[in-house]
Image 1 (cartoon, rainbow, N blue to C red):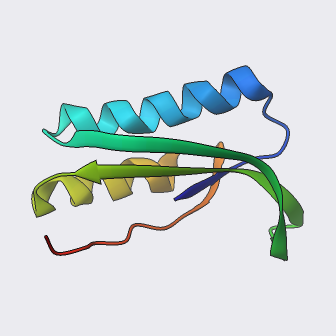
Image 2: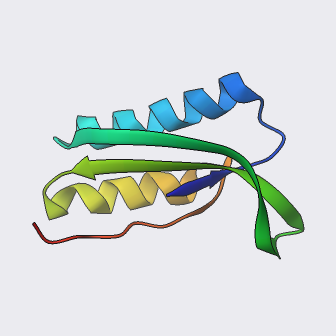
Image 3: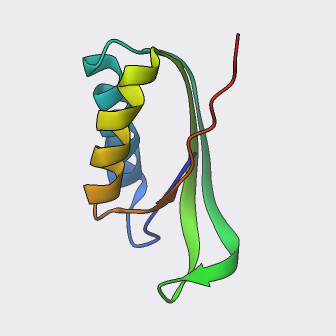
Length: 89
C-alpha cells in the first residue's frame, strides 16, 4: 500500500503507481493486481498532510526484491507513506 501526495492529479497518481510497479518487475517480481482507491482522508496527519491518494499493489516476488523496493519508496518524494506486508504462500 502506498499513499501519494494529495497535490498529484490522476495522471501523476497513475504514473507513480506505474513507477512503483516498474521497480517491482525490474527486480523479478510479478504484479498480481493494482487497486487505485483514490483520494481518502487519513486518520491522522503526516507532515501536515490530512489526505492522500491511496493505492494497493499486490505482487509476488522473492524476498530479495524488497530491499531495493523499500529503498526506492523511501526516496520517492511524491510518496507520503508506504506499507509492505509479506504473506507466506
